Length: 113
Length: 111
Image (cartoon, rainbow over all chains, first blue to last red; front, top):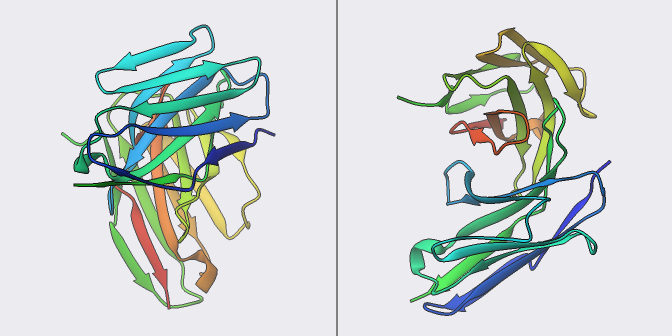
């Protein structure tokens, strides 16, 4: 089955700095890679995703890159703000009816004002 | 109008009891899931249903039994609750090959 590794497990940055979270996956059949943000006590929410036919995608201050050959993908957050503080999860899934996403173990991002 | 709603939000119960969690989605998605989030925040899939049919049943004790009466509902029944079952249980739904919409979670505490 799919295995997703996520690093680092914790990340602390100063407000205004950039933050990068990296994930690797094992199953070459995986072709959809979403990222979720989970604030304390809340549900995970989809913030950006990328499909295997695309190398990079950007949405305002967040961007995701995908390297299919190396089987890794990354989340980049620029100009971080205190409200970016949360747990971030990467996931990998295959285009099947199961739609199952395998999640990384999460990164706790703290943005210090 | 809540997209994926779960009830109850909190559940405190004694060991050995049986409890149910309900989930409903109004997004028209074909696929629904149950995930368990433990104290370390790890998210692990338990079950997946596509159009009322069980698709994924991960290594979950058979004390856990999902039921999908229609594609908008996926309930989770747990028999003989154990201390180790304490966790947050998230229901989610999606279109195939798309991101999940999660419910607000049910925090289960077994005492």
